[in-house]
Image (tube, rainbow, N blue to C red; front, side, top):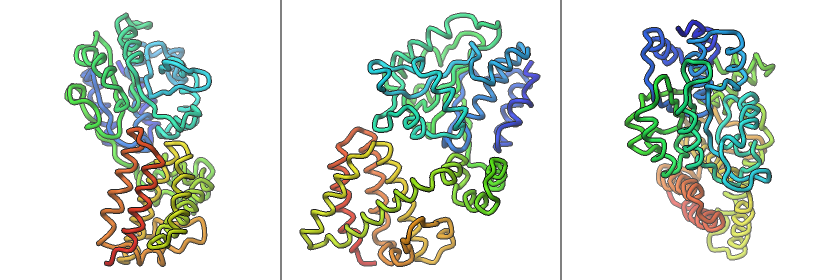
Length: 381
């Protein structure tokens, strides 16, 4: 059983400890029926889940045809569930089944892709992806029956934290008492974003970042210059997806930087100046018109930049990971970021991301955040 373990898992980048643990459970034929892989998308959770599911499903029936189907993500006993949203093609009640071909294309092109990348791929970046109750009912129906090839069947739920409460409750019994030879693999960035009843029934495996040297080697194999590979690997903090984005989306990062520079300069000048306050309000309205996922990505960029400024202010080495794309001078900006204002700044940014995720009004969120920033930038050290 599981004779093709090495072929699948050995191709996964990093995570040697976790792979060894998974291999051990397979070797002794003790496969927990509900498993939770916890960590960032860019750390490679999905690549591990795919390799593991392929091993479990093909291990009972290691025929070449089965292996080929598994590698192409068309094996009839491996099912995928992921967040979706209404699109121009699927306007009502979207489910994972409606987007399987797109999903396969996305995973093939971006195996370390994030939820943000997926929503952009769907051309639905201004919407909140969810896993709804119809997805749950579909899963329940699929696992009720015997597997097509007579062995295991597996359900991979990507971003399981996006399960609605109704969907979570529907799936609970299947996860708690699955049919024989049925494996659920739930993937999410934070186990505590799942409802407690599901979380408690899963065996958890935490996946941290990938080693910097492995990321650099991975980039070089993709044709990235050695010097750029090393620099990007250093900035990525173990996140392969982030490293690939840093290589491939330099223009996007430059756009975020332009927005950030315009924002902080205007916010600083706005104190006591009505004309500039109006300018700041226009900036807020402009960003509020962007897609929600773009707004959240920008705020994450802002958090990283404020932290880099703090490091610069106190002459810490971590500043080396910040590489501006424009003429922005971090060292000059850093004099305004210090121990007295960094915590409320970061808290305000994180709160804004949370409220955007909860479908708050972007215009109100960015207006309030901008006026807070005006006050905080003038806080004395």
